[in-house]
Image (cartoon, rainbow, N blue to C red; front, side):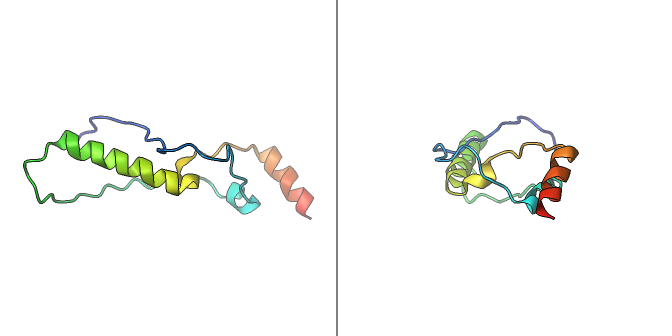
Length: 90
């Protein structure tokens, strides 16, 4: 298998909020990347791979609009900031 292209898929519609407030627990957990590839057979072998790819990109874009928190990127936080937040809770 060979990577042919890498692309960032953005939500189809813009968010109403610029940022989502994360909890302290969310911030303490390290980000995880779970690379998974799903393979599906097609019923129509005459469909070009470019058409299938375009449909998948469009579907993902629409899905990210409905589940907007999944579309973003988590900003980094320093250990100093995390320790200050912890100390305010005690």
